[in-house]
Length: 260
Image 1: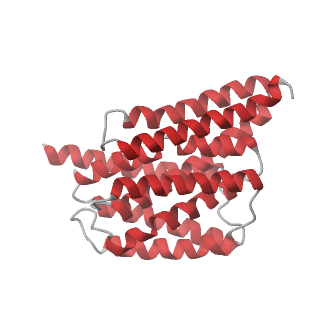
Image 2: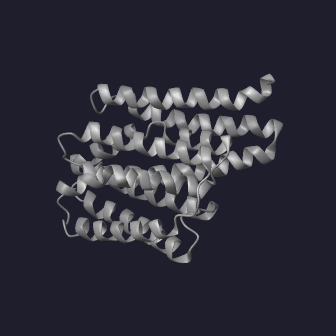
C-alpha cells in the first residue's frame, strides 16, 4: 500500500486519538476550564484547514468533506443543546455528558464505517419527543433551566440517535465522512460545559432553549414524515447553526446586562 493510500487511515487514527483524549481529559478534569473554548474552536479551525488542503489536490473531495463536516457539526450543536437541557443541575452531569458524547462518537464510527440505511421513522419519533420536551421546558417560565430529573436518563439514547442522524445526513461508508464526523465531535463536551455555565448566568435560559428544541423537533419530525430521514442540505445546515448562534448571542447579551 502506497503512502498516499495510507494517509486517510492515518488521519482517522489521529482523529480517534484526539477525540478519545478529549473525552478522557474532560472526564478527569474539573468543569469549566480556560481550555474549553480554544479546544472547541480548534476543531472548527482544523476542519476548515483540512478542507483547504484537500481543495489543492481534489476540489470534489474537499467539497464532500466540507459538506459532511457542516452537517455533522450542525447535528453536534443540536446534541449539545439537548445535553445541556437534560443534564443541567445534575450532580453527575460531567460523567453523563462524557458517556453520551462517547456513545454518539461510537455510533458515528460504526455507521460511517459500514454504511447506514434511512432512519425516517426514528427521526419522526425523536422529533415528537423533542417537541414534548420543548413544551415541558417552556412551562418552566423564565426561572432558568429546570432540573431534568428522570428525563436525564434519555441523554445517552438521544446521543445515539444524533449519531445516527449525523451519519445519515452525511452518507455512510466513506473515510471522508468518518473524519468529518470525528472532527465535528472534537470539543463537544466542552461546548456543553460552556453552554451550561452560560445558562447559570441567564435567568430566561429556558425560553431560548425551548425555542431551539422546537426548531429541532419540527425539523426532525418533518424529515421523518417526508420519508427521507434527517438528510440536511446546505440551507438547513446554515439555518440550524444560525438559530443556535442567535440564541447564544441573545443569552450572552442577557447575562452581561444582568450582571450590570
